[in-house]
Structures are given as structure tokens and as C-alpha cells.
Image (cartoon, rainbow, N blue to C red; front, side):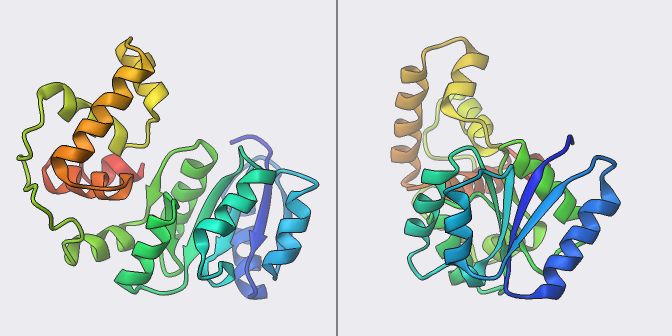
Length: 220
């Protein structure tokens, strides 16, 4: 990891100090940190400068998380966002994920997972800590018509499910498979229709339950 600018948004001084300590201790490169205790101050700063990564507590996000994310992305479209969830409620975690957050950890996660989450977020790869995955899988979040190893997917669609579930974009998959992006988008629509799912989180959970990928494939 090269030098980076990290924004830390949390109303707890000790938490922000701990994150800075872990990053400084774990990486050889020098990094710059800016700290925020309020969302409005964070938004105003994003209008002036774009960090490499924002680590933000779920407590600072409003009930309308989708609007918060959209506003942040207007000013910092290339910024990676890592949300630290302050609770282990299944329903509240689903709200975060359904709002478009693909990088999320529990505040109780281990130091190793936090470092992995930072690396993944900076490199624009999805990351959910093992604690969140366990909560989602334990509640069978994707209990739908489709069952593991079912759904009528073709071998090509299964391959695309695996690639989408590990965080690749439609363009990246198209480049890898040497087909047009429109072909991948069509496959994606067909996959979602066959599995009766609505978002990438449900797709990832289906892929794990079907045995297409496992927790390690997704989080590292």
C-alpha cells in the first residue's frame, strides 16, 4: 500500500485514535489522516478534497443512508468507503447493505480483518467481515425460490455469478471473458431474474450457500 489520505468519521475519539494506531503500525508507508465527528463537517471537506478511503461509523449515517452515500460520491466518486457497524442487528446490517454499501465490518472485528478490509476498500474490492457474514447466513437472508445448486443457471451464468460475487464489475468481467459489456449486463439481468434476487449482496450470499464461493473467496 502506498501513501494514502484517510478520512476517519466517528464521534468517538478513542476509536479514531485506535484506527490511526493500527494503520500506522501495520503499514510501512506514511499516511495522512483527517478526523471528523459530524457528518456535515465531513461533507463540507469532501467538497474540497477527495481521500483515498473513508472509514465511517454507522452511527454518523442518517436513516436515509442511500442519500448520504450519493452525496458523498458526488464530491468523491473514486473514494473507497468502509463502514464500521456499531451493532450486530441482522436487520440494521441489511439496511446498510441494501443501501449500496459493499464494504462493512463490525466494530468488534479482529485487527487482522480490519487491515484486510482497508486493503480491499482501497483496491475497490468488496469486503464483509466474518462476523457480518455469519449473522447474515445464520438468518438465511436469501431464503428465496432458488436453492443451493439450483435456479436453472447455465454454466456461463454460474461462472459470472462467481466473478460478480468476488467484487468484479461487469466491465472487468467483460474484459476477462473478452465479450462486450452488454453481454455481461444481459447475463446479470437473467441471473437476477432466475434467482429472484434484487442486489449484489443477495447474489453473494446465494453463491456461498450454493458452494460457488466461500467466505475466504469473498473477503480476501
